Image (cartoon, rainbow, N blue to C red; front, top):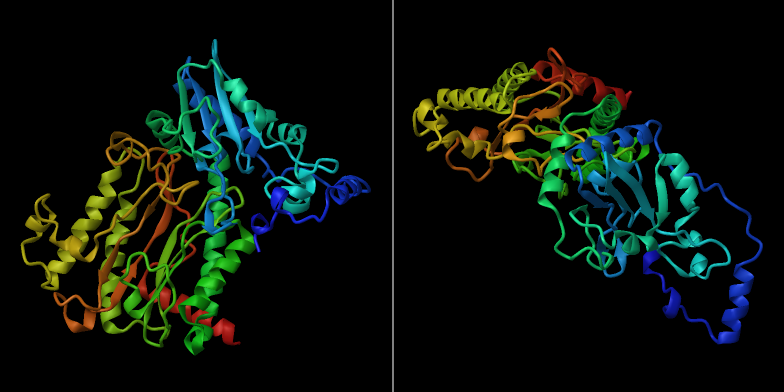
Length: 481
């Protein structure tokens, strides 16, 4: 049960006031001091300081406030696990709930102050009475000084925020805004589109520390694919998609923070369903199994990788036909990712490969040129989703960036993005021949744009049909040996 669901404060049923006083005195005594060191990944403080400098340069003479947010409610009085706002974490390296960072403008830059909720220690009734901040509920809670030392930033109690913000003009606000906890000095409709845009655009270029986090997330994800492949026999025997989903999510939690987004495990007719996150179907011998999975590192940077595996170890002729066309598009897309190329280039080349392949199969009702025209797009019936995006703290990173800085911009050294073509022939789509219905194939890799070229971070996983068959057989057989 989530601690928030327990009765606390005025709801706690203590029998008489005198007993409450005695209990309070007793609860304030006899406690040793636990280790309250904040959990901060090495390098996070230095990287965050550099990130604040980059943001400061964009807001000369203007102050910035970014909220970490609070855990959303799952049901009634039980909350989901907390995960800080990505922009807030990028600026601070802090994982505290209901925290706020303020960059207050001054001549020549900004003064940064982090505000975190004051912890409740022995002697304070909230020590045992507050499910949000009491140490008996949440575990050892760092002091303000410990946060400051770990993150190399001035830290004050959250209760000071409202007074400190009074009188500040030109205030830009972002993050996960909880109207119930917003200070009076910040309006309920205060989110700054400009600040959110600037944060997104700055985060497009990853520094060396961020790239290290992404490499770790990708490597852990590749190992997660191995863990899932080993469990295919158990899934066939009755565990189904749920078993494979649970396998990956246990792996993600063990090696990282957890999955970076809702895991997709789609077997058979579920494979063409783009966001099949229910993962509640069977896994049958002969199915093509689409796995879209990513480990989120403990620094919240996430991978995003997809492969489609033959459950039996061998693709059927129709499955291989689809996979081969997707692979052809994928390789064309990878070749188009390089510094200086337009972000839209790799999209365009993949769509052309797919359109020509579908035309060869007789599935386009118009010519390839007409299908590829803005007024056509007939091939998109079988691939209505995008085929690539920025990757980082969010799986669809930098989403608030302006079009001219994202889709309309050139690729640059330090960008990390996905390339993910696919074909999705739904079981009820009567425009395709029966042998193709119910087949979905996607290939997705994570790519680092470098100074002169591009690096496929997830290249430990094969992309050819032959390579995937051999890889699948190796790991399934390894599970049985």
